[in-house]
Amino acid sequence: MTARKALSLTIEDVPTLLSAYMPFLDRGGIFVPTRGYYTLEQEVFLLLTLPGETERMPVSGHVIWVTPEGVTGRRMAGIGLHFSAQDHTVRDRIETLLAGQLDKAAPTYTL
Image (cartoon, rainbow, N blue to C red; front, side, top):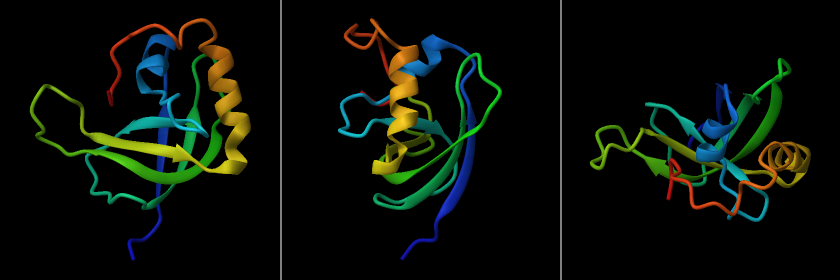
């Protein structure tokens, strides 16, 4: 069993949030740039600061995506974090910030 890890992420602007957000997950999720080693299904605790905010929102979830360091295609190393069911307020806040932009085919960090 892999130990639970803690990370912090500050997203400075809405375009970066749009690239990091994973709306195709039922509870939402976010790409977190990191060079650390993570395994699928590993539990992660994240302190997330959204654009225009100073409050760090606590989020917990499980790793569902891993982009290892050194991957080809100029992808950024990091993990995709699937939000836990109790973090619906974080998902709702992100989707409010991204209103009207989620259906655009903008490039993302994962797909």
